Length: 579
Image: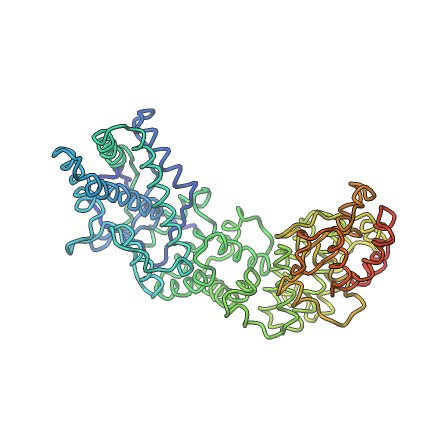
């Protein structure tokens, strides 16, 4: 940012003092709760070290705030504060359950200790009941914000959270649940190692006291919001704790600080479309940056962006573009869900190509798509380019098994040219993509395909890559469209032809995974459950092109030579289909 400030004197505080002496608010422009199992487990293991006296104390990181009206807006540290609040809620809930479930076995001292734990957490630490301010709350500017704040309050104040169906929970809600139950498992497992109820209650109290007395943070309270943004970015720009999208968001908020509410609403449109998933938002921004500026690694993304976006107008244009393109980007990652994604594109060929690329786990083309979308190419034109993208990917990666770096760099170059207006029609774009380093010679492709082997599988990228190859080869001379049956309805499964008869000994290990030994057959036949004769009949009756002829070939004998002969027949079509 290049703005010099004087950093306020930091204060070292235990968690007890931090919670007791402050009321914190998570501003609407901050990232949602994103800690996963690894971070939660690290938290718990650090606490275990203290409980077992392997260490005396633990530095829990920094907290950066903007203090106004006796409220500390959390600019940095909201993940730690949210996790700490969830942890305290777990301790309180376990104490409450023990008080009820073990009532007839409790001594008065044990009963009082459990009540002290609950009272300390409810009244001194978490707070928020009987009209007083909760120690930590989320600011609300939209219905999604309100839903998350309500969920967080209920999760941390012993209230029912089952009112939200699991499929309706956002990523932050799921993360809160996961943290709660991970802590619950850890604490209950520790308690179970003690034989008596008194020992378990004493340990629960020690866990609480250790956390609030021996975990400490350094808190920096900035005098202005602008200073807080700069401190946050300075502290986090080279760290691994935050995702690039989180630091980029802070940078955009800094550039557009005159209208934070509107800026947050725009960012929320991007975040909500991608389910508030920081990893997905980062990937989206990286694809956009590759399309419009240059290809950078995820680790270098913030640095590159912050060096080029330095004015209010640049920040606004960047954010407007993200909002404009995010729904289309979401379709690339989720072509069929939700319904709005399924219905966004009217061109069926375009949607089919996106789905096929998604199933084959191909993402390198995203910048090309975003550039074309931004430059107002129509759906038919984008579909024609994606057809070329698929051909290049199949030749370079699927057949020749070359690495993806060349494709990533090549696709990025083409995307840049489209965005800058240097490539203005489909023919020029496709010609630019057909660089020898990506397309490769027909001779090289044919030589590689003649001995090509694939593992296949029941699901995932390996299944779909082989399924796509076999479908294109089988339907090469047909006007029928295989997409609906093969990809959309997933009616077929991969089978090795050598499994059809007692001929496995005639097809050696070098040939059993050759393309010539694979075909697709209807799942409805339940091929694996059939005996040899029934498998033959299933192949003979299959509607997948070529299977009827294959059945007759198998009857005459199937061995290494016939596998190679079939693969050579396929080879004649390869450079015609993918060119």
